[in-house]
Length: 251
Image (cartoon, rainbow, N blue to C red; front, side, top):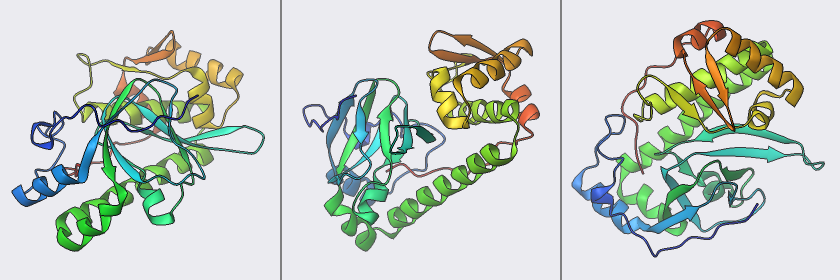
């Protein structure tokens, strides 16, 4: 896995951002849009498997996912990995490093990605001059906390089958809000090892668990990806209701 470095050779202007037109995101005021446009330094292109942020490192940048998937994770000294959450278009990366001064988790590209790059040293200007954007940053952190609460509950109290059903239903819900479904189907670009590292299961147990979901007609496992066939059935099996969300901020 390689560490990727920002490149400013390509530029998608904030006024023409393809995410801004999606109904999931709130609109900027004209003043906010001008600030964010000046805040942005360029784009970073990351290949699948690239490390975007590394645990213990200090980064001068924040990133917003423009396209592609990634995941956040922590590792033990012996190399065992726990995936904490998945990142989709519109998600903000690196805010922890801005507050704690160094990253306490790593981020790896799950697919090829394009990320907007922001200079961290201008973050104070955002909070001082744009209270609406400052609230947005707090909202993003609170939303992440809520998702991690759900993930911890699932790993701690759900059965293996319920855990897998919850995770796939959760990813389906997130992708649905971004218009990423093909018809009613979603292809999730994860391997069984990714699922095992998220669910806290062995790879053998994960394989058996996914077979049970497939036997119920809820998913179809493909080569290095999963096709979700029945998101409602997954939610019912996990006893999970997707939360109702207001329009979310986009930095």
